[in-house]
Length: 369
Image 1 (spheres, rainbow, N blue to C red):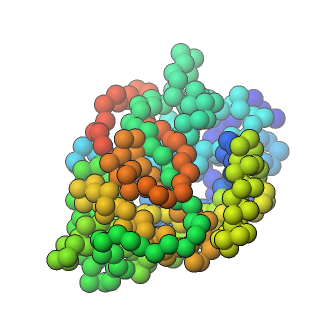
Image 2: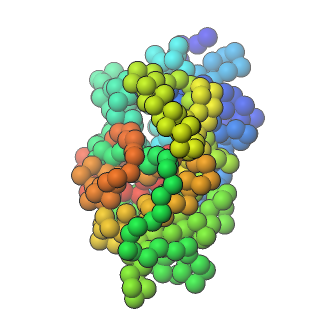
């Protein structure tokens, strides 16, 4: 087995090996999870309006040592059109972790040269100190190590779907219709133009999602309005299970007791129990979320309607991201939630290191991470 790994572009023939490596390397914490992408590892990329570049490293014995993906698209930076990239799906086999620095540095240099894109963003689990150290701490011997600049922290917030509850907010919320599409595009386009790594909703991003994301519909797009019908907020409740699922490997530490208590209550109240090891969660995302004026009251109304829509269908939770010190956070009062902390970084080649990025919300879409 070679000590050095030279990255190469994955092909459809690598599908099985990618699925095996991706599903076998879990996210570790008190709840140990892995992401499942069967039957087609590449389908999550194919549904997006991106150029996907998945690089893999062979072990010389028919398996993969590591993998990493970049999704290149048209976006916004500093209020101007720009070619931007998202770095994700990094997996390294534990027994080959020492090859990590070389593999990723080579991958990134090849990527930037091939695509002509030098501005990327990525999210790292804040508690994953090994990944934080390996990726973001610069070492003199790694001359080609990408430059990571912290943008901000955020939480992946999961609202647990337990007892039935009806929307109580006075804010009107309904499903979108085709007649709403022009104004939905208008507000999303204006919002993302101001975001670093924003999406090009002005070039048909929302229409593309409706046409190409499985199960992504106007009926599941929630529109919040005031009494005059003016738009206050919107989000699409999206079930990613055709392309991405979370499998439970283990409950450890305090999560063992959380599971026991939760499942006892679920038995009595008849809500979905947490899955046993080997089972998968049923969950949804709040995607393309926009709230006028960062109003907690409007966000609360969207949360209540998403909850009421998903709970009777047997979902365990729905997820969205909240930035550090997020003004929308008060809307969560009264909901049972779990939070998983991440740090978002801007990433550039070592020779083009960028130390200042536009502040505020980014175009990061947790549903695609």
